[in-house]
Image (tube, rainbow, N blue to C red):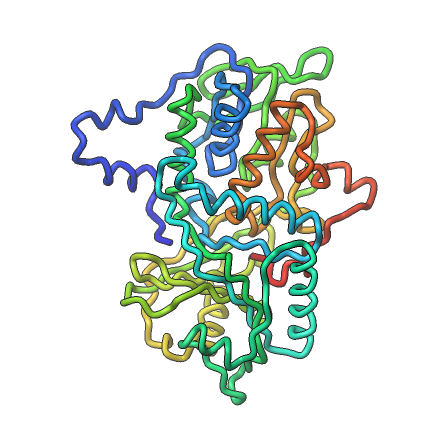
Length: 417
């Protein structure tokens, strides 16, 4: 999707309203809240929405160092799917997909969820065997997925090149028809409007400097650029910055941060009916509602907090896309950008309580963060409200890195996006 800020998009949408400043005034922090959520992206705002709506907890502040939706939520490539291999991942991502389907009605705000299908290409015998294993595992977990021959893949997505002479010959594909895309910044604004309507404060341009703990070790609140704000419960959901914030509470997180790049082409008439992903060349492509081809690549090979990334990776991605879809080789790139993704040793998230009383964390989604947005937000809200994990997010604890019971989606995710 395009790389405008969520703030400018909504402001433009409401530019004709006489009382724009009254529509979205910045909240001023109060002295004390029941819950503080650090990070005003889709996950943090979503958790605030579910806390207010389903648990009746409205004395909540969502705090962000910038504007809401201005981090990874506004920088992703909008893909939604749940075809993960392991039982724990399949349950969580499919829970999110259930929520995605009715999210516009839930929020009374059009998030532009499009159930167009996600197709994963197999280029080698190993790909074929791996994807067919995924399909069987998905079906056992009640997740839709089916195998397509290369001819069926071409019929489903006409621009696909299935010539045996291709550099990356297509041998078949796995298709999750229930998957698709949604409008990234609309998700943040939908959750924000719903949460604010129920009394949640959204505090923008307010960096969190530290999490304060009391003499008993429990959370007391957060130090911010606007002063100390007291709270009995604090949840950190700030992609790319979680480890920095958590370290102020005395917790070191098993995370590495990488740039993740994407680009869009000039807009053209509708030509691409679905989302196509290729693990072998690590590239994926869809078409936005504005007509741009949305192209994403893999994570950079080095750790960094840069939101630019390295050019050679994008060059490789574009070369792969034009090999698989030769009709696009004269398209012009309109813009590129990068986000920051946090990665755990097993490439699965950490979602739940921490050893610090009153401190919760939601991080380590790698490239899967947007897909799971409502599911992660829903289960995080449950965990905060009840001080116990929801059955779906219970396996995603920080403890697994000491017990060794990992959820190794590094290879099992078919492609790490």
